[in-house]
Image (cartoon, rainbow, N blue to C red; front, side, top):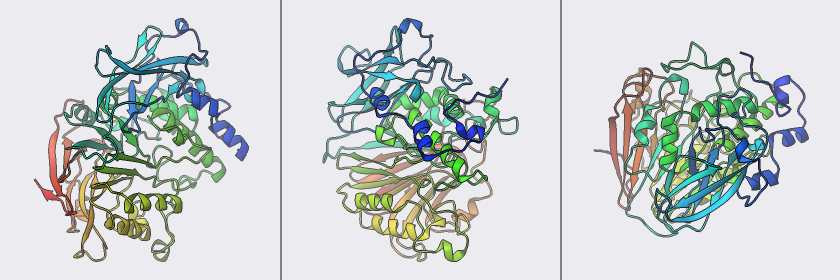
Length: 525
């Protein structure tokens, strides 16, 4: 089977020079197209009778929640595995109706509208719903002609200043579809208490899927999936493959999502605008541009996340009334390169966040009135070993500054992923003084599938457990479920014993901790 054909949107695939003007024109989209994908009442669209069946094969999602609404998402893709990356759709625009109701039968519709799904955005839509009541459960769906999407649900956030009795969320990361079944997502979608899902990076992987790494049993992939992805069409195809998983779709139907990327949404271990695989800077910025665009296309994000060429701002803030403040951080796009010496690594000027983003999160922490101040990022924050420079260990000065800001806020929590293991850690004001005070805790979620079947102890635990402030290590696959109240945070680390053979594994308790308010400690339950 031939490789996907590249279109004029992929000059890097042909090795052609990419000017700044061409980059923005090819990797970006017009303001009109963006607006139509959000709100387009009565817009001209293709006749629905000409459309194939199965338009909603990739499900639905919601995200970027507020107290009065949120963003809805779907992609029209009757054939998500179509080699050209267009999901089985022709190039014409399609009007997509959406509805929000207080009941699953949609007898009481409280908001509706129409958006235009265009080929420029892979026939995705991102309507922003407004005017809803705070702390209220709703259902939503999309319609094109006589085709109706699956039904999703969400609960709006509490009103500003309101302190709810509880709020529950889960964290997930590292979804190497080819390494195993999304069994962890199967159990996550069945959580009784779930108000929000936080995706902490590596939503997709860019590697070619081959006999060597296809450990998920019972599946096959076509030839276009066997190559490392580099074009917009290939990124779209990879999202189509991962998002075709029914358990991931169920998670998105179950609760709103907020998301930040790590490296594999573009390329393994990249930092700033520098490739780690020898791609020239000129071509790599094009890779970043199309990868960031595909990320926006396939996630329920605010329109502000659409990239301007190779630059995108996905750091985002969400306030859960007065109970919690979430701040998501991008630790890839603005980081300095890997250190070249010990002196370089210890430099006070080194940054993983960039000056603008660091100022933003510092202000959110130090001016917050929330009881819980929660940061989310793609890589581990806790000090482990100086030779792991991909993590915050490679940026100790930047970490010290963030720790100081966490210490000036109440009940600081860092959420992270990346390492394919569960870790629970207490954050020291100064990691060089392990007997000093704590300023927060870190909850590291394991992978959904990356690394396949593993054991609780996988041979790497000694590096972590050598530190008294690391309270738990577990090498198995899983997710973390967290419940916040005005008095305490309960964090539950769920695992599954296998994922490669099938998706029938039960969920098993890895560990559970309580962090009482104003203690910055992890108390085992």
